[in-house]
Length: 142
Image 1: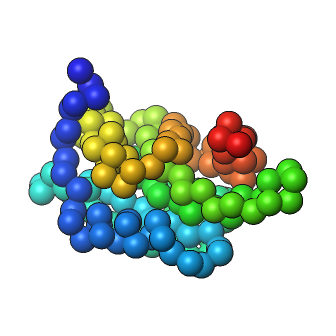
Image 2: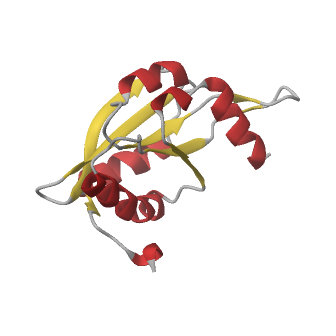
């Protein structure tokens, strides 16, 4: 039942930006941070970052408000190969207003489907977003 719950649509300009982001040629870490415009019930762009580490990204996320992040990460495999997985991170910190958490949770699946991402992770505490955490999560996709 919750799979079909859609609370907010995704802004058309944001969808276009995310599709372009998916096919970017740069080899650095980059992030698109999104938030929900409550009045318009729309997922919109919050911030964009180039050349940002997981630790720097963590500092950009609000401690008491949910955010969606699409993160292009330079991943060095144990065998020396390099890949650039696109990760979807749902930051839903404890202490958010329940109404806000429900809007974000209800909109997450729609956004993931729109952007066609498979590496979907969730954090409840922004402090958890570290290089080690991300590498561990990505280790399951080898």
